[in-house]
Structure formats: structure tokens, C-alpha cells
Amino acid sequence: MNWKYHEFTERPLSDSCWSVQTGPDGRIYIACCTEHTGGETATVIRLDEATDTLEYLFDLDEVTGDLRDSGRATQCKIHYSFVPDREKELIHAATHLSGPPKGETSYNPWASWNDPARAFRGAYLISYDTAANVVTESRLMIPKEGCRCLALDERRRVLYAVTYPRDHFVSYDLASGRLTDHGRIGSVNTQCIFLDPLGRAYLFDDSGRMLRFDPDHQRLEELPHLYPHAAYQSAWHGVLYDAVADPRSGAVYMVPWKGHPHLARFWPMEGAQGRLEDLGPITQDHDPRELMSVNLDHVGGLVWGADEKLYLVKAEWRGKINGCCGESTSSMLMRFDPELGTWERLGALFGGNGSNHYVSRGALSAQGNMVFGKILAKPAGAYRVTLHEDPRDLNPNQYLRLWG
Image (cartoon, rainbow, N blue to C red; front, side, top):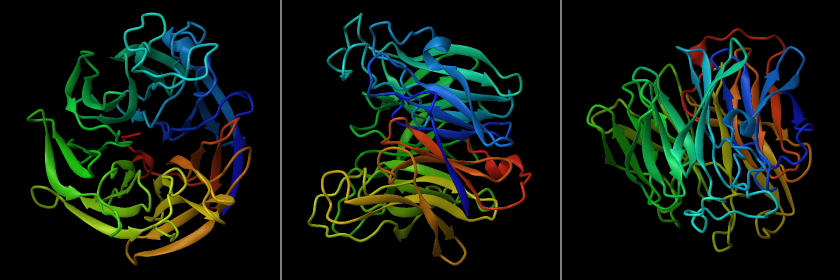
């Protein structure tokens, strides 16, 4: 395994990289986010694999017209909300909130909900033409709220999203621009929405219950599945963190945003309600009597590899847990063989400032390289991983994922 850490040196105030996605052109797009410094914005970056360098494409405040120094909460990040659009050769990105206005140190969306000067304007949908290298459209998609995660139904030309802070499941018709609210799903946001071949959307509420949205009947329904968890835990906080599909079998592999996370596999087309399997815990053992942060006991960056195996990055730590982090932390790239049910440790990823244990998202390029986003650093950055000496030329079905 060869890898390199790319720091966002041209954005020194950046502090997180929440979203990494492959575009319809087979290239990898990265969200360089700045959420802890007032009056800043996010930048969309692309990896140039030929030179192994970063291209800084555009700043979110400029393309939305919601400028960083406006006095409002800022367009500071893209949070699991990149989706490729093969039909139009676009990559769509929806924005999220948390960055405070210029001169301030924090932002509370509830406290500023009715403040016309400071309140977040809303989540914008930006469409970038990956062939012409130009932003084709920028429109307000969700007024007053941010977009936590995004998925695209290509056939119906509909986006699905979860809003923050109200935690509503919504759909957005790309042709008409109509936003439809399908209801509140809880108090803890799911971090991922995935789709099945029929275009049905899946997510988990904060009680750990799987929900499915049926686009033909336009309704959310509860399925009889709770996210798998340790025996000492309840299902609470079993919201989805990341998911990736095996294009051959149709199985979806997923991890939760929950301490002591388990890997699960879901077969959406089996029976009327699908079948959910518990594939067991992923992260290291620890004393369940000790407090554990979900930001330390973490798994992210799920990628389905060209070798038909699952890749992910898990946190590891040494020493006694103290607050968020142990005495020494790292991100370990893992490979799971679905046929044998076995794990392989490929190596630790590290570099740049801050801790290295939290990887947000991962993506696979058309050449078979992987990129993983890092948070908890200033400047933030991303890891580029190469597993093969020779460049690949993959089929789009091998590397495209239609959710963020």
C-alpha cells in the first residue's frame, strides 16, 4: 500500500473534510470545510491524479452569493452531500451549517432562527459540470436549514436529504425545484441515506429503527430492523454513518454513528422488507464501564474496491481514554473479504496537524485510487491511497455511489 497525505495548504483556516465523492468523470471531489472560524466558507477541491496534486475549484460563498462576511452564519461545509449525476455529467453538492458569522466564535441555529441578520440563509444546491469545469447552477434548496446528507434517484431525477437542525426527511425535484417535507424522523440526524435498485431510500432514526421511503406511495415506513449493537447497549443512537453497495450482489454494507460500531449487511431486495445481517464489531475492545466518545470509537470511509472487497478506516488508540481521545490515536485502513468473512490490516494513515483517528468519507476513482477525508486538523486534508502499481480503467458501476 502506498499513500500520501494532502494538506489543504491554500486554505489554512480549514478544519474538516466531511465529504469525498467520485464524479461522473471518474475523478475525486473533496470538500474543504471551515466551520470553527467565523466569517469563512468551504471550497470544493479535485484531485489531479496525473500530478497527484489538488485543484481548488470554487468557494461556496462566491457561487451561492451568500458571502462569508455577510454577518450571517456561513456556507461553511458540504456534509456527506456530494452526489454524481451521470445523465447530466454533473456533481451536485448541498451545503450545511455550523460556521458562525464573522467576528463570532459559535453559532446556535435555534437561537438565531428568527434573526433576519444572523440566521443561516439555508442549504444551497450547487451543480458543477465535470466536463466543462464550470458551475452551471446554484439555488436555495432548503430554507433556513442545512443539508446533513444527500442521495440521488437518477431515474426520477429526485434528491433525498435530511435537514438540520429540525431532522426532517425531504425530497427535492430537480426539474421543478419543488421541496417536499415528508416529516420529522428524530432528534439525532442520520448521516447517510442509501437507495435500492427500485429507487427506495433507506435511513435509520435515532432509536436505531430502519426507515424506508417508498417513492411510488410517497411515504416513510418503519421496517422491522434495528441496527445491530453490542449486548450491553440499547439500539439508541443507531443512526447510519456510512454505507456502500456491492454492485454485483446488491448487498449494502454499512456502519453506524455509535460507540462500539458493528458492520452490518443489508439485502434490500430479499422479501418485502429486506434482510439485515450483523457482521460483528469492528473497533478494538474496551471496558464498557468507561465513557466512550463516538468520535473516538469511530469507523468511516467505506469504499467498495475493484477487487470486490470492502475497505474502511477504523480508529485505533493506545492508553487510557481521556475525553475524546486516547494517549495515541491513528486511522487503520482495513479490508474485509465478504466471501470469507475475514479482515486484513493494510496500514495506518497519518499526517498533518491534529489527531488522525477520524476519517469521514472515502471514494474510489476510475483509476482505482482511494481518497479518505480527515477532520480534527487545521489545515484539514485528505489521504490518497494507491493499492496497485498500474493505473486501472474501471467501469462507472464499480466506482460511482449515488449518495454522499
